[in-house]
Length: 184
Image 1 (cartoon, helix red, strand yellow):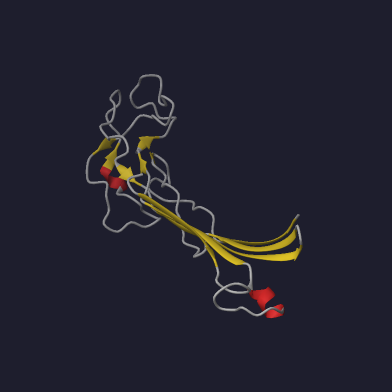
Image 2 (cartoon, rainbow, N blue to C red):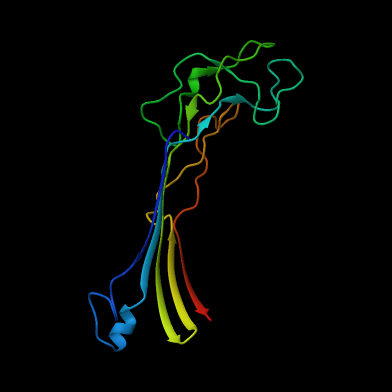
């Protein structure tokens, strides 16, 4: 990845007994004391990927169409593979690739295209309540992919595939979970 930024924070909310906003005892203080929030923000550019031929196509006539580690035979690059407006239905210019003559290796380079970027915010809100000495109750509300941003997977990068150049899947949508823990 060319760029990656990851930020996190933890913050105790300033409410309740001994805090700056509320100083009185009672049920309101108990309800407002012990709140914390946490978050992790991740932003990154897309992963590079290589356009290749399907593994069953031995275009180089070497007897090995797949050399392992994703090193299949490659096509020839005959145009500009980048598009100014990319969509999941056409992530790159598929017309820029063609089968090389039989018995030759294609001239398309390794990792010449980039996949979709990644944007994610995971956040939580935690409430700690002291029940008695050595016994605490913790309520947690956690959200993964809080803003439900679509994070697409890599496109189909195999020339000869009917879905060549298309993105067919995405990573997890928003998930929210609640938890209650007894700490002793």
